[in-house]
Length: 100
View 1 (cartoon, rainbow, N blue to C red):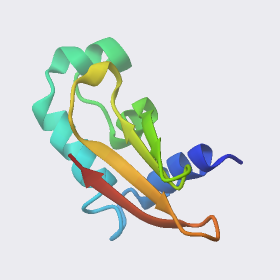
View 2 (spheres, rainbow, N blue to C red):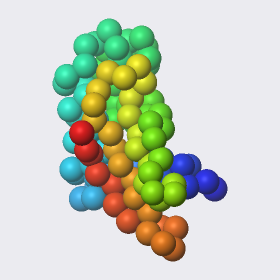
View 3 (cartoon, one colour):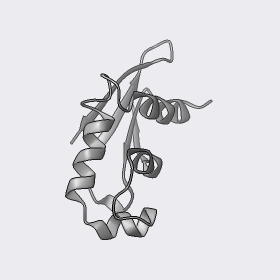
């Protein structure tokens, strides 16, 4: 499994956990509130997406530090926020944070 795939899996697993409270859960709730319903309708076929649906839309925006940090965001450059997933030297996820 690539680190990009591991990062996305880590994001999914952190949802609705203490770790996800200020990461993926904050990212999802912020964007459901702030983006127009038409955005969700276009991408997901619903005006009120679930957390899982929003997570499924995430795309890789950039990789940093020799691929040890991956930044994910929503399609169409609708936000300045990213979910930043960092790995330790052993290849395990160290942190998942929402950043702008």
